[in-house]
Length: 254
Ligand SMILES: C[S@@+](CC[C@H](N)C(=O)[O-])C[C@H]1O[C@@H](n2cnc3c(N)ncnc32)[C@H](O)[C@@H]1O
Image (tube, rainbow, N blue to C red):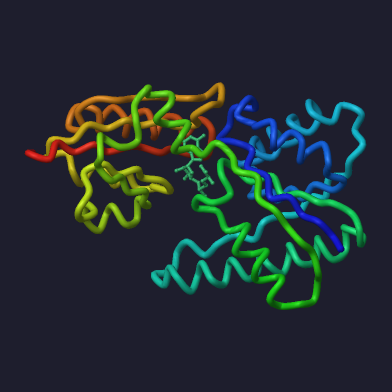
């Protein structure tokens, strides 16, 4: 039987790696690294640096593959994501089947925590359902960008005895979630927070959190929004890509 570790590696700071993750890394023979394209090759570089640091004798193999691109132009969001996921499953299935021998251990190094807005677990289940490749897998939790964001802003995720919701920029653009005043927003390519500058909301925003490029801004949304938009555009132009997450904290009376 093949074994796969799905290892959460944290959100950008090499020191986010947990002791459990390091143990799993050391116990792995083959690492599958999926490159999302040139602009994000920094993220692959960070993974390789982690392997160099924790397995200095180089006694492992890296198998690299190109992650298929998702159709971002279509209006049919859900089918486009399904199609993308199944094309990724084809690639992962081939990698596991061809590059990992029976009895060997492989690993996927997943950004942040594998349980949060990441498709690796779903893809592995899809491959097992297909039944062509056999393996067992476990999941090593990682420090998510959400934990990293609130830690860097030295704030809690929720207020006392209150709920918090984690959502996407796409959903926030459709309306402020009902029943909550504390909302964490990820995957926001369109600065959806700008829809709510007329409300009494505090924002804690972070880009490239945990990396040398980290940018943090917090304050009343109406004041912070233009500054964030400017910093975001400048950073995106300079690096070619951006990863940002934010917490919106609404004053219930506002
Ligand atoms: C596909 S999701 C992956 C989330 C990841 N599994 C986690 O636990 O953080 C990618 C989104 O995570 C957020 N993100 C990940 N790393 C980040 C970082 N270092 N700084 C800011 N946001 C980050 C951004 O919202 C980005 O669009």
